[in-house]
Image 1 (cartoon, protein in one colour):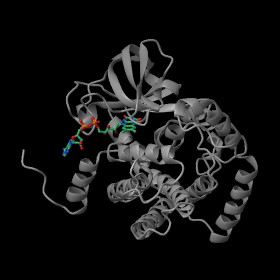
Image 2: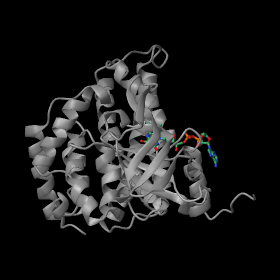
Image 3: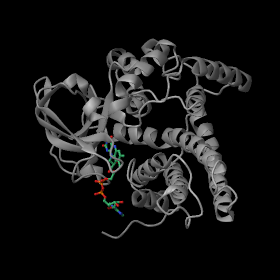
Length: 383
Ligand SMILES: Cc1cc2nc3c(=O)[nH]c(=O)nc-3n(C[C@H](O)[C@H](O)[C@H](O)COP(=O)(O)OP(=O)(O)OC[C@H]3O[C@@H](n4cnc5c(N)ncnc54)[C@H](O)[C@@H]3O)c2cc1C
């Protein structure tokens, strides 16, 4: 659904005013520590009607255009306001349920997902199936009205805080064929689920290993068709790449402005190496912004192209260049001891987190393979 520019500008002003008046103070960086306040913030956003803006009103959304949601999220980031607790729910799982859910599933699941009463995690990756998702081994066997699930997932973001999991499991004969995968909606308090939180190199705990031991899931909780989970999962991954690039661009742009402010206040401000690299980073951000403009156009016309792998690769490159530069300015020997800038722990943490972009949502190598094969039409490797 296209949007009138004047309507969008008025909407942006209204959003900015509301955020300025209502946003809480910054929350702790650690997801677990920040969670209770981030969940309360999500509830406040929901009650005020700022979440699920483009989702159907009958399920708790507002029936506006997807660009309204992008504009609201941009204003949140610009104001340095916290993100709501359920980012995986809101950005990835929710849109998938809206697209593939039955009426009953949408009625039961969307409203609590928006309000933060329910928090969702995404159980796709396994210890031996990440890039090669079709090799997953978690099995779901139909017994009467339930599927009985056994298996192990890893890297599951927010699993230790979640009430639901969007799970991929093998059904049918268990072969590699993608038609043997089913997408299940699993309550995290089901008997037989255990969650072991894992620490990232930033020191934060944001993901976990999740084990399913004879966990029973009602057969009504299949999203899409039984055995049709691959199609649903590809849609989830599409939401994970395109719209995520927009949010992360806005975050990196805001943090780069903070870094430049820190540098301006330091003895590094006049250093020619520093000024040259600031210019390079700004140029990269402008190029990324141009890609984001294209993504917004595609989302507005509900036609996400297969260029999302390039967008993700470019986001990864730009953010790693910027936080690499931040670390060069703030590390133990900043740019040959020419000076120091404040807020060093923040930049070290952002540098470490930026490295994760080479892995999540599909690794660098996999995205490059997709670009070569699907965009540039290079042949597949001979088997
Ligand atoms: C911060 C973070 C959050 C995450 N959150 C979630 C989540 O919530 N839910 C979830 O399901 N997963 C999540 N993941 C997992 C992520 O999607 C996987 O880690 C990713 O798909 C890679 O899988 P893997 O770790 O098994 O690596 P592997 O697939 O084992 O790959 C190992 C290395 O081999 C390379 N490689 C593999 N195959 C090829 C090939 N064909 N050609 C060239 N190189 C290849 C890879 O690029 C990589 O460098 C998260 C990851 C991170 C870092």
